[in-house]
Length: 437
Ligand SMILES: [Zn+2]
Ligand SMILES: [Zn+2]
Image (cartoon, rainbow, N blue to C red):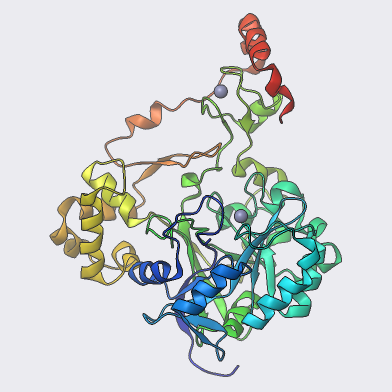
């Protein structure tokens, strides 16, 4: 690895294929490659590469290039061998492989630890983090944890330190994925994470441009290859993740602490006092990523290590277009045709979002130009997401909607006193569910 000039590559390194649960039937290698090109991504994770049929779909539609350790589509998009796995504690991990032979080797090594590799693209393994370290080390793969803080399956939702999961093998772990509900400023409140490289990936379950590439990384490397990517993760020879790009965490599904049933927001201390039970409807209050990070953090203020790149917040272009023309869905014909027109004019969606001059965008559609400007100037606000519901974009002029959000903001004791009978009734009504948290 020498003095070759470094270039920037846009890389979204966590997706799922059509054999994974709750994934769009359009999620096929060929469609992903074409959509990635329009988005402006140079490299995409294959997703689900331990799944036999999925691997053979790649063999059918792409060329394997052994020199770089990646699949190549005829349109130039490269695919890094990648999968997500679920371990015995339900934590999700990301794996990157240097070669197809290593994919098969890992599969062989985990054979007795998985009921069926072919039943789901994201295999459930009867192993814990430290056992995965052993397997990945032997095969020369990269291992880290996916959507680090997300409830249910984020490793740091389940453990208080990644060192608890990976045991003695923790030094082998060089990266974590932030997930949609967190960003660098949030994660760098936890000093044990400072030594890790952060990845921002879409975890896309559909190839359409509001999902694929909604988060990605700008990699600085000499060429797109597994070796160069590994150097980025290890931050060697100037190779690095130069920029993390993704949604504002407020758009993420698990950002804030919120009632699953009536969607009322709670400040976490109040939720704790209420024993995570909503006194308004009896529903379960789901802890948000913002609060989980507060629990884990040992720093009052985020402190960024010197190697940490900036994090740039974006909004998928189709969501901006939908806002600009005042429709709710990004899948209407008007939104779709405007999206295509803009991407054709400026080459890629990423160019439209970040580089194209506003006056040029306005020539295609005046209001879309205005809304891209709002986005670039940070004027779009959010009703934050939580309890599994995505956040909502609030453009200038619609601020009133922010006032309509349900927030529980009364002292718990007073509320309990005043509503004694009502709470009793709710408890009764929800009796069966009192055990399920
Ligand atoms: Zn996952
Ligand atoms: Zn509720």
